[in-house]
Image (cartoon, rainbow, N blue to C red; front, side):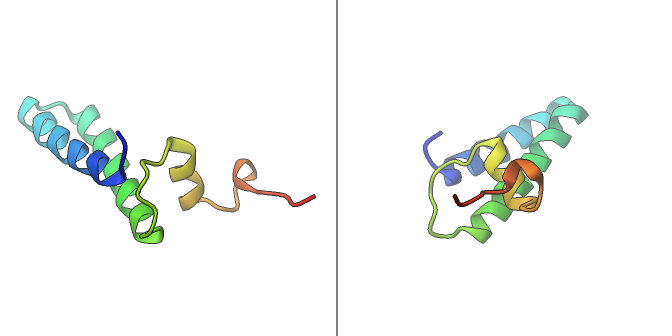
Length: 72
């Protein structure tokens, strides 16, 4: 996907499908991902790109070692 809004719409659609199919594991995964996307969008309202998993993780956990950025 090109934008975070497209990704959010896709996840919302897939959540409805997972509910209809009774697929609890997929539903749980999609709900977690949707929550992370919405939180990322709230923290970065000017940013329209679709963030990857590391960007979502670091947005929620900025102090984790893999998220730290060091200046030389």
